[in-house]
Image (cartoon, rainbow over all chains, first blue to last red; front, side, top):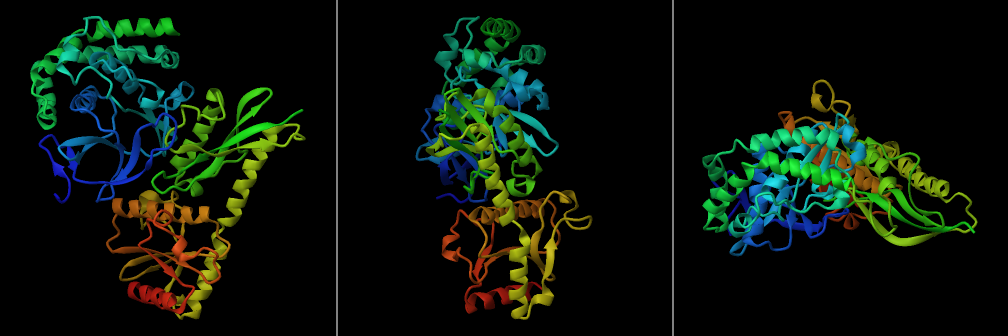
Length: 247
Length: 254
């Protein structure tokens, strides 16, 4: 057994073991449990085994979120035989998204940017439970994006097969909770930033994850994301129209 | 006929530790589904800090908007909330079920507050320390101030007793009247101090000890790993061996 976390060149931590705790309580918290590492670090562990592409979805989602300034909890991997499980740092003191408290959120721009990111990577699992609002001492809430597992980006075949204007599904119930008057501008601004991404830039952050998770066709993933990111403003505008119709 | 059913919504200040407090209820009456919260919610001292008290207040404001069923938590509540226990009946003679439930929840918090007064356990603990001849080495109420942990000044509830000499020893007695929820409060406080001391080192080593006073209905064996995880040691001062161990710890720190 390796002692202590392995630090990959990406800065990613990989733990040989954690102490598993209870299932994460709360609504919309299915399939995840609490975990503590040997150093006392607190994590949320996706206890169900994910396929390599699902892990890549999470990893690419996290990396692109960081690139775009979308607040996301720090991830880590847990060794599980020849494969891995996905963990993210436990965000203490958090609610799920609720439009009535949005005036307390101090990073609404980040929420707008996560909506833009969703259409680029094809994340079909954005709902209120996948936006955490962490209470901070100043009496404000800080938004975090979580759970990018159900996107197209981690599978070369999936992202390549999508139509140019194809949008990932968005639950109608969630669409009604999106305050477009406040989020449309930061969403489109973030989409504009996506359009400036380069192949070199994307390759530098995506290929190391492909190496770790055994995906041999990393360049196809990069090409697929680059194609969608080059149309990010158009895709975001379509999404805005879709949300507006649902409301 | 008035009446109905309800289920309690619990708030867990730290899901890793497992303690929880009833803060609201989902109620089903002939008029439909409604959420009811306590008239007064637990404050920062019970919930782990001002941000957690803020979280609780904010969450409770959103509950009623999303209440759809008494078997399902409103989706905006995050991982600090859970729905537990059986469906309970509201007596048929109750004319205003929401007011009745709010009073019921508030009564629980009033009891918790009464049980959380540190003075009883503190006084009992002080008496024990004096009997064992170490009362003069132990000071009352350790709290952040301008010189010690200044960033946390005013944010952390005081620890009942402490010794500051060769190293810092923080002591919390557990008395016979203490409820289990209060023990969890102590643990949450120890955790908060540990985090504060890691962020603002004070130049000496520190240790956290909780000791169970004679007559306590809670036994050391009951204080399992989930109750006092942040205590470095839990000493059973109900027997002579435990008292001697406590004395040794105090003298070593003085």
